Length: 273
Image (cartoon, rainbow, N blue to C red):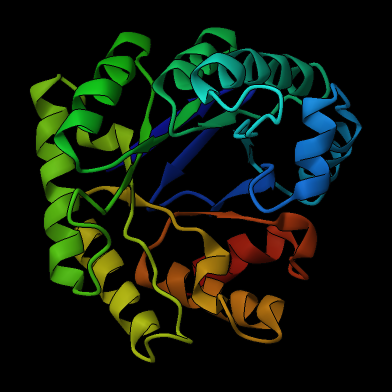
């Protein structure tokens, strides 16, 4: 049975088909948050501290850490993002004891996060482009950590779920070339917004089932993607989540503070489905 193990210094979380649904808190991310980005550039980590504590209190099992700030003083993320990632991780680990998900498109920032993180964090992410596979998979192997595999490649994000499945399969196969087992890969099949494609939800559910049945991998998604561009986004997201769980999705990157369903109820709902 597929079990993806992530750890902090004192806590183990297992992502798996027969495990409680894993909530990965998304809030420590300056993307689209201008105030947070400005605070981080100024060395103010007060919002990070509040978000870390609030998300764990709301039931997050894992915290995603993204340090993707484009500094006004230095726009080169290869220089600015690694030390900021290290600082945030060290700060968060001093506040909460849950495992971390190290989130960046900059390989140097990912490695800085891996070096700073206690336990066995989740790496976020690798995509299907060959240069990304060659840059990220050696880090996954070196640090013996699980990785989020996002189902897009150099052709972009396909609306065809068969293409997204093929990309995920290729990532799993290339990971095997590096000695990385399928149970250490958590596939993000890229749920599309229903505002742009009415069948996106159904396609996503079918793809999650196929990934589970044919590749035997755990899955995740950005839970808010489904409602992009629509009103009442929280309501749509919260309706989508139990259906995704019923299809076999085992985790989601989401805002647990906005979730009006307790962690206990999430686990109960998965058992019912």
